[in-house]
Length: 565
Ligand code: ATP
Ligand code: MG
Image (tube, rainbow, N blue to C red):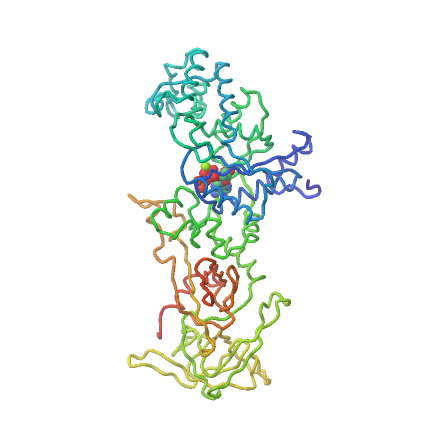
């Protein structure tokens, strides 16, 4: 338990106080309760870091519990993906992997107990009627005509519901609380509904399934959770959470709500993300443009950078939206420390060094990572014909353009100073090649006379080049708040049509051919890239751009377009 440090946020302060006052014997027990109906996204990362983090910091434990009270089909795929994502983030549940469906028997027993106590009743109103009887925020609801059934009659009906005697939607078990309660959640909410569906774990054992509010508090109670952390939208459900536990007089965890993570340009809702997958807008849940943990992992985001991001965002009680730029900053910061630098030219323009021997070659020392001396150096080949980036040349440079132009001298990274002597154009006047001279004295990238050269370009020797594929990503949505649908449209109308750009034939220095899957690299002056584990082939790495160096996408876009202008 942290001692000297002031607790970082209101949740840790609360837990700190509970531990100090000896509540629950000073024990801390939390849980992360995903519903296995989709892949985890970066919002979930915030909850995971909080649930597991708080437990860790206060010497407690955190359970992984799948909240699988809602029978659906493909759930097993999601269960496995969720486990993998949590492990990747760096958290582990040890032997505490639970499923809410394991408690169906216990939950049902509790339901019978509520019936016997006269706190629950079987209601025959149709879903539409229930809605009608419910009232509104300003008007009280009306009692169901079935509300006064005797406990005996209710018990009999509940058992027959469970036995499968009634069709779906014909009856519900409801709590008997108060139809005039100002909190709508307290107006005799449903506890069980009839669903003749198979469940991914319990099969056809059940045809009644518990509602979220009833199930969740009991799951927490059964597991001895001390602090049940959840997002703000459950604040109005807390009275009901407490009501069930009080009526049943069982172990009573405390629910504490915090603000969910919202990110600009990003949709964080499993239901909406699954629409993108189903409609083929993206290549799957792990498409590198998706804000899912599997997507951003494939894109090259590291677990460390996500954790550092979550840390920086902090935990608050008030809703807010975080600038996605902060996430990108955290990723850059981490990759800057760990990524080996390489050279590749996304939009190549050929340069011939006229005073360099036809078949000459030179292997130059290249620093692998200026941020990490232990990463060492490697040799990079230089020859008479090289590629530079098209946008590093301008026929008529504006002021402050320090790269190549007729007569101008620049430094080639760790190689030589070259001067542009001549420009070859095609019939339309497009630049197709530059003829340059070099200064042999400047080998390695510096001159003995120390003359000033401001521009430093990355380059690739044409003869030695290997080919790689670069996949450049832009934001999946074009506006800061993609959830805001345009008039008469949906959030899908906010998609950015240019979120992916594939460059299948990028010349790169030879070392790139031997990159391994999952390697994280920096392409000098471009950005950080991740070797796609699924698309790459032997000798042909496919590089997902994780994040641009400093340039915004717009700048890269400009570099790529505007050939020969
Ligand atoms: P979604 O809204 O994306 O469908 P959910 O809340 O339905 O998410 P669950 O599987 O029920 O997803 O969530 C598991 C846990 O993660 C819950 O405790 C939930 O409060 C938390 N969580 C979900 N989204 C966020 C978010 N954006 N920020 C922080 N925590 C979140
Ligand atoms: Mg949910």
